[in-house]
Length: 377
Image (tube, rainbow, N blue to C red; front, side, top):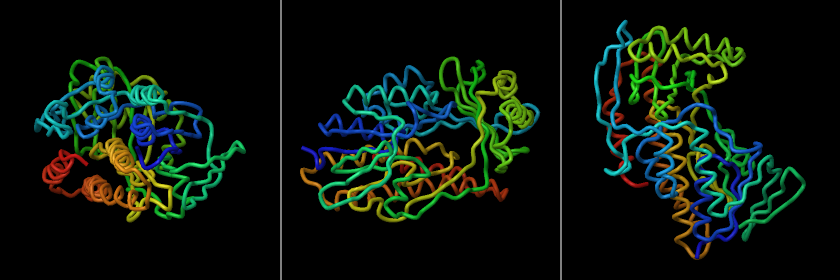
């Protein structure tokens, strides 16, 4: 038995779809709605650390993810000098356990498709191009009005609808994301043989320049700078030109990558934002997960991992109980808030040191975060 029988998930991102898989496998009827027209993910790569891979294995998709992605255990630090000199090679902690790699890069749309296909196999129903108009959480169910004029009643509604969550607003939680001051250029391209792991270049004209292999024949590269909203108005070709120009300060494998940055449609620019809902993540029978509850800049590559962990913990709590009560959702936030909050705080702190041009204790910060993440959530 589970504490709920019928669940509506709003948002078909990593948190919502992963939760849907785990609940459906336990016999819960799960419906996922999303305003987008179909499976969607920003067309670049994603870095997944071991704690994310641990949840993907529980979801039953690890073998497919491993086959599509590129796994590695090290991290390189390089200087922004004319040679891209290697400053340090670090062996990263396998936070998912000794039988999983420390890190895996994968093309975001591939990951999204793998997880959605697994959800369909588990019996999750998807309705794309559909949003919600209103929510009314009563003592026994949530009444939902949809944008197509239909309505439904559910034991639980999960707001997994991202950083600008409509569900969060509808239930009266006023926490909103704020800018950190940084913007990031990302590009997806082919992988040269010189790239076999993530290398990070700190300093130079940009704050960070790095790359991550996402498959035998692919990688994504990124450059972090001061956020400039005017960048969002650039044409795709101008955006590509800007990223290539910024990258000219970085050498070593970057020289191989730069030659491959030729497709304007594979370049995007976004700002760093952050927030954490500071107390209860639910109101009545409506609860938040993933970026709706917390968002962190990608400085320590834990956004997707935190969403996956939210799904795993919420599913565990709901499927371990026979009856629903408010204490279940309180227990979920009590378990997740300290851990997700620490990850967000660490991500923001690293960015703040870079913005202030301070030499912070980056190894100490990363060691503390990794040690925490090696423990199951």
